[in-house]
Length: 308
Image 1 (cartoon, rainbow, N blue to C red):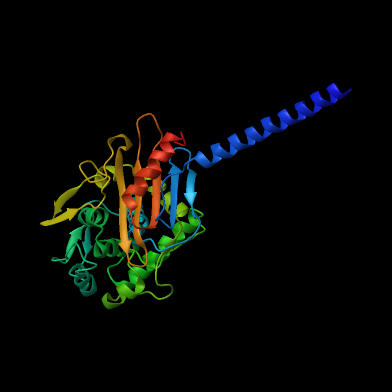
Image 2 (cartoon, rainbow, N blue to C red):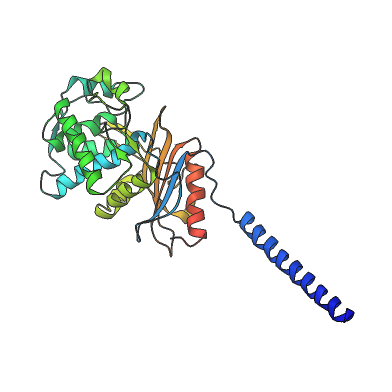
């Protein structure tokens, strides 16, 4: 009787130890499951382009200022107008507005100077995409809306918000076609009133970029150009994940897409690439301090965990 009781006690004890050991093992596995190093970005997202699914996010539905990442929506609507027969790559855009000329000369917000009263849409498109020219983006937006004055800029921004609504983006609102904040646009005559900054979540921005690269895949050819000359002016691409740049990693095959920075937005970046044998991904980091390192970490995490 005593022996049976002893055996029963021993069996229960061993079972408890075994169960406890499994529990510790599970906890250890969870603790050791390391995510991507996305420490500084206040919001971040990774999206599988083939499935249109967000596969990882950090505060992905929190709307934040997005600086020049805004231009992805502006340039998408421009491409849509061309696609629908509203113009050609050689169509001329009126760039005579004094505010836009002044903006192009700004040491802070400039980049592509309007030394002429018109440029082709192709020239302005490249300036907006590669150099992230603010005045080029505004001029293109006005052209899409049918004019060349601030009135048409406001009309175009309504078109941006309408497109966001069509895509069912619930954490997106635009007040600027370039990504500059309203207080910065005021000296140039382009403050439309309302909120100071475009507010977009990283999840929504990933979907905007996904639509862009899916509907107009040739954007990746232009977005991977490191520098080029347009109308006598050098355009420089600040994407430092491209080949030959500081944060380049060959296996990720990054070929886009857009950088951005303002003081309210911090450093922002939408990246895209397709590792061999995997799906294309879109990554977004908002209000970062180390946007290329953290993007690279996020991309490697997605591929290493077979999320794309």
